[in-house]
Amino acid sequence: MNGRTAGHVAIVTGANHGIGAATACALAERDCAVLCAFWRVRDPVDPNVPEQYRRKRAGDAEAVVAQIHERGGRALAVEQDLRDPDAAVRLFDAAEAALGPVDTLINNATGWVADTFTPASRDRHGRSLRPVTAATWSQQFAVDAMAPALLISEFVRRHTARGASWGRIIGLTSGGGQGFPEEVSYGAAKAAQTNYVMSAAAELSGLGITANMVHPPVTDTGWVTESMREYVAASGTHLASPADVAEVIAYLASDAAALISGNVIVLR
Image 1: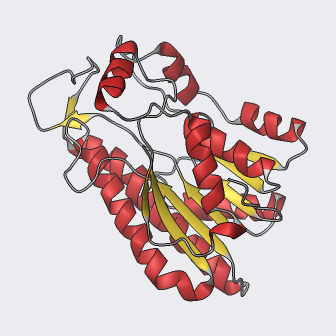
Image 2 (image 1 turned 60 degrees about the vertical axis):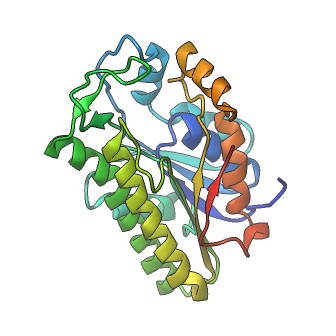
């Protein structure tokens, strides 16, 4: 995919590892300046979750920014807790001060927590499960539903204030209309974000803004174990790399994708 994003400025959330980091790099390679938003997540030790995945989630985005700078791009790392209602304003303020007006928003971050309605303590791959509680619900919905909604709202407010006519909003989702067993709050929060983005696509088309969701296949961001690899192989779908998914996101953020809006794009 060769769509260009030259001259644009993006905010990418969850950009310290995985799909977020790969997306930041893919956009920068297309001459888009990038604010890499991140939050250091310190997950509890789980013997069935690779330690490298825990380390990546607990790290910052400076290595991603350094890689972009080495290749001649412009980028900035900003640590921000998306559960804070003021996070959207702070991220846009930081991006505008350092890089210029933001016209591309990638809502990639997740407050992922594996919770369930069943009494099981482990999922089918042996990872720890928690019962649904107010705490698990709040963590998931604050990051995966509230934060994207507030970021979209702030995006549109600034877009209209400066009389802009070009914009891209892209979110990441999993699960679907049939729910997400063993990750029930995650699936529900992603469904809420999808609904926000579909509404944005309908409401904002007259402002030159497109809005889409990307539904990746199982993506090896560091958490995939051998058991998971076997499960994916048997399912007939692909085990994607973060860079594979980032290429699709970067295309949707490009000038070439002007006619693509209001879609949940499922990758296989």
